[in-house]
Length: 88
Image 1: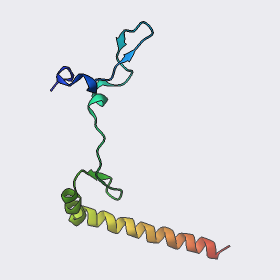
Image 2: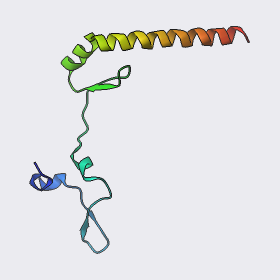
Image 3: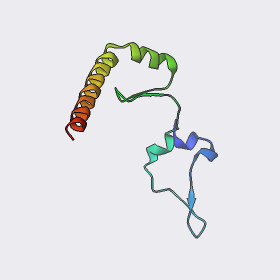
């Protein structure tokens, strides 16, 4: 599907002072992006658009391994912070 086949209202146009349409200073491929709601896993840095995919991800070995690493890092940082506070 090309941009020419899209409905007119989806094309963003900017008019200059003479009334001529000019293309905005944005890469063309950005015109086709549409914001979507979904689920983002900050531990794995992955986005899922539906609940089933998100659920499957959370059950995956990759997610479990990343979660273990994340939790270990959190515990270590907490211990370091507590050690710093007790030495004050």
